[in-house]
Length: 130
Image (cartoon, rainbow, N blue to C red):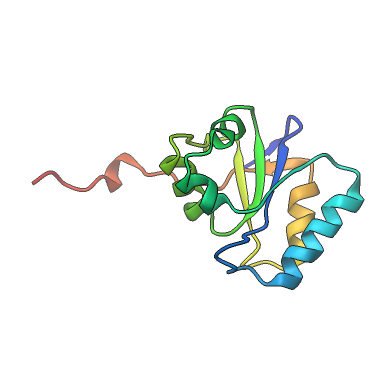
């Protein structure tokens, strides 16, 4: 689902504590964003922010379209949910730095379109009641 991005905000997670993203990918993405001239926000660690229920997550989730360079989309969705700051699945794209190369991550972040990719639970996937 590719939609024109109304200037999606860019968020970069450095994954400081879990260190599950290769250092060279994180460094190259951060360097590429910095030299692109494009505005972006960088955070040390979304996992830590969610654990602290950081109010910045609520701000990030309610300010319109957002592209997030972090890890797995389902994990990022869960982190924002844990902090009571659910992302809008129609206007959120998570670019997985664990699975993509730095050039691929940068291409997605800097592309004009937003490819919403948060997993959405369908009504048929609701567990049956006991």
